[in-house]
Amino acid sequence: MTDFSFQNLTPDLILDAIESVGIYPESGLLPLNSYENRVYQFRADDNRRYVAKFYRPERWHSEQIQEEHDFTLALQQAEVPVVSPLRVDGQSLFEHQGYRFCLFPSVGGRQFEMDNLDHLEMLGRYIGRLHSVAMQEEFAHRPAIDTASYLHQPRTDILASDCLPDTLRLAFSTVLDQVINKVEEKFTPFQQIRLHGDCHAGNILWSQEQLMIVDLDDCRRGPAVQDLWMMLSGDRQNQVMQLDTLLSGYEEFAAFDTRELALIEPLRAMRMVHYMGWLAKRWHDPAFPRNFSWFATDKYWEQQILALKEQLAALDEAAISLYP
Image 1 (cartoon, rainbow, N blue to C red):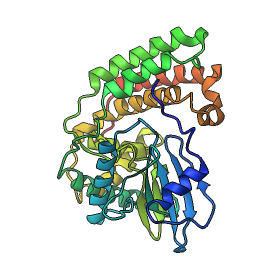
Image 2 (tube, rainbow, N blue to C red):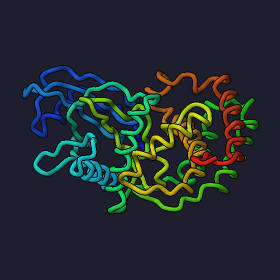
Image 3 (tube, rainbow, N blue to C red):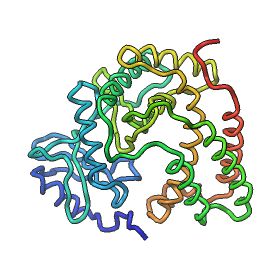
C-alpha cells in the first residue's frame, strides 16, 4: 500500500525542516484546518508570521507541486491577489527527511460573503484576471478534471470501503452508476485551461479591503466554469443573479463561453462523488475517523443515496441560463 501518512511528521521534524531554510520559529506551531496536507502557523524571530505547509506523501510528484508554485507566482506577478509560496535562494519547494514542504506569509482575513453582490462582482474580476493569465500557458504535469479521476476512481475507493454499510451497498451503487453514466453523456468540456480548481468560499478571504485567493493545491486543467459555479447558491432565480454578477466582472478580463453553463450540474455531481471517494481513500489516516466519524454511519449513506437521486434529476433539467 502506498504510504500517504504523516506518522513520522513530529514537531521536532517540522521545526528542523523550517530552520533548514533559514527561518527560525519563536512561537509554538498552531495547526491550521487542513486534512489533505499538514499546515502550521508560527511567528519567527523576525517577528513575522508564516505558514508552513507539508505535502501529503505520494499525492503529487515534485514536478506537479512545482507547477502549482510557478502558476501561483505568475499570478502574483500579474497582480492577481493570491497568496504565493516564499522563495529562498530562488527555490520554493523544499524537502526534509522525505517530507516536501513550502512556506507562505501568513494572511489573515474574514471569509468571503457569498451573498454580497459587490464582493461577488469583485471576485468575478479577480477570476477573470486569473484565467487571463492561465490561458497564456498550459500545465505540463498537473492532471485534468475528468471522469476517470472524479468518478470512476472514487467509485472504486467507495465500494472498497468498509464504511459503506452492506445493507445500503446495492441501493447506493445503483444510483451512483446512474449518475456516472449520465455525467459521462453530458461532460464535454469545450476548452481546458489552467484553473484554481477548488474555488469555493473557504478559499477566498476578505483581507485589507480586498479579496485574497488562497490554496491552489488542487489546481488542474479544466473548463473555466469550474472556478465559478461553486459561488452559486439558493434557488434558480438567485443563481442567475449571482452568475450575472460574477460574469459582469469576469468578462472585463476574459471571455466566457456560455456553453460551459451546461457543465455546472455534471461538475457538481463529480465533486459529490470525488468527495466521498476522498474520504474513503484517506480513512486509514487517523485524522479522518476522528474528524469525519459520520462517514461510517448508516444515516450518512442514506443521505447520500437521496442526494445522488436529486442530482440525477438535476442532470436531466435544462442548464442554467442568463437569458429567459
